Length: 365
Ligand code: SF4
Ligand code: SF4
Image 1 (cartoon, rainbow, N blue to C red):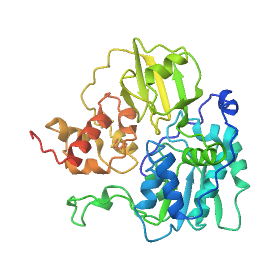
Image 2: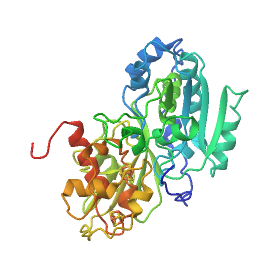
Image 3: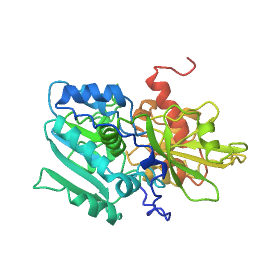
């Protein structure tokens, strides 16, 4: 691990599950679980083909990417993906039965591979709850120190299994030249499970209800709320139904560090909308010149040199310039911008570089 920051556990109380949850469950006979991989794929296509987490690939995508071989390992990732996220803890406290049902169904359909349940070692309640499923080496609970972005699948894989490094050395040749196509961390026989997807599946099989997910909502001056939202609803309509006005506010989706600013009028709740934050719109603070403190380099969990990438994008003289292709290894955690005392928009610049590189756009093209 090159970087990472421990933010501590959020001081807020884990929100109780919305009161409407139980009342909304229709009285229908349960649907039989999928008997095998093919039936699981069919079910996922029907109820939730998209990713349910901003960082974890959709389960359907992960399964269909390896049609011939069963997975060797499942990792149920119960770490918070953002420092302020309470979702994994709230799922454990409020809906553990549905999450466990969904996980067991997926595991059975995939041939009972070994499972690691990854939990934050500081969250004793979640840890104690999931320890009851640990059985004889086939299912293990691993408590890890949740230094952000420990919950990112690439970092978690590196911590839990003996995978290849994901830093610059992995995608540079021995002579130090960048490779034409920087290889990504690939673990073809490992499936990363998002607990929310397990909840969606477990809930559907018992209630036939789908298209609904919990969203953590923040507004300045109040603690977080956990609200069930219909996927596809307009974000502004959803926030207004909670008595929150978007006028004069910034609306940020999926966390203050790695999230993105959205237009609540145009945006919709998606399967991977974990969090919505409203904060008063302010004039952006002007950045100063780089003071060469090196903090961004120290913080980057994948060993990039954020300031050199930024210098390449901005065509700055006097700073070391990195190859723009290195931006492909960035996982968009936002830590470089967070620690930068000069308030430089490092992560946003690198994100744009990565998107341009992925689209094959050349400078000036
Ligand atoms: S946003 Fe990208 S470059 Fe910045 S610290 Fe995270 S991984 Fe590194
Ligand atoms: S953290 Fe900011 S000021 Fe420090 S080296 Fe990086 S870009 Fe420069």
